[in-house]
Length: 506
Ligand code: UN1
Image (cartoon, rainbow, N blue to C red):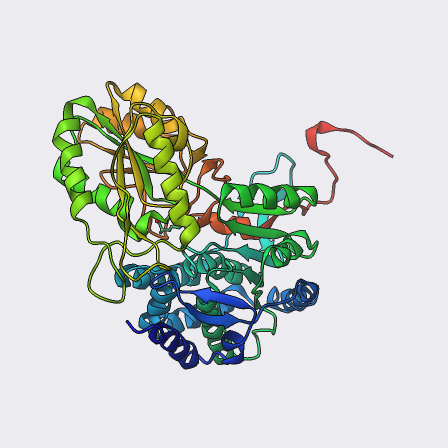
């Protein structure tokens, strides 16, 4: 593809969504497409000094938005979902251009946005509290959920738009404005989503106050201004454990709520009763899909010694054959890494694995589009022990393979890393599978059976334990993270009985 055509295509998509060219043509933040490594845009940044005013507008929006009935707030999210449906092809394509995801995964990411909008619309009529038995006569004890206030969203490059939507769709129906700082690597898709939101808000009408959804393009100083602002009671941050620790500490200092979704080091256990053909296909997607750049990517495969030789050599040949190439030319399954630093991180981890006695299959750089683009053949690494780089999340397609003898040992290996996002088991022995899902099994936020650890649906709560940060986003009751709980004790009698039988007669 000619050097300028990616830029032209990105500009055409942004233009179609109504984004003013001045916002992405002559700014200070260069955007590189990982497909070729070329600069495709220069985005205007928000100076950190302007963040307080933006948050003030969001705070003013909160005062109005919290009075709009929740089902009506749901209508705005329904309209956002409509815009996303109409713009799915174009936005998915922009994800491909900016992040390098293969076409089907770019589209899948937008579908995930549509799904969470649908979920949130239903939720807008179900933000229910409890009625609890009171110990006192003629008393009622209830619990209700109120909007929390302005929600800050910090998102990573690898799901540049879906992560915003998991948070924003819920926050908006919960009555909260959102202020978003996307990754510096992916401002174009953020501009596109911001434009689609604006369209939905215009259709919705005057009930949608200005400042309901704000986009802040900028670096660390912009993120810090958001995280430190006392008018932002909830911050949802997705990214590395290093980033999350810094954000979490700052939020703790001012007692704000943190929803952290950080690093994963996800494992699958392959038991003797596994369907090996299904396992092979599941492992291929989970470990190599999105070029290994999902937080849920499969990074460790823990294989029973009785099936090791039947599975691992076959897997090695899949690794040798998998198509690595440009996501906009042909139908490769593995696209580029996001940038040079990602490739360097992969090379460093593979070097450390070799030094620790690992046997590396693949992992070499593939020349697809010249020196500025970083494509790599995914690496399968047979390791003698779980040590060194195996304990870390390297955001690249490296799958470490370990052998085990009994399930307790496999579960100990699975749990024996600092991260706790996702996990899975392959097997048809009910005892083994249920043990893995039990309290003595996987310690992760997500535990799957006969599938890989990635590719979650939005209906469940998404997130994990330990260094993954403990936050939950998306489905189930994750909405509670965006609201404040209020307990109400109501006396509808004429006497004043005190709880715990305390007497205070004046
Ligand atoms: C992420 O990589 O931050 O479960 C999110 C999955 C996707 C989301 C990944 N639904 O793999």
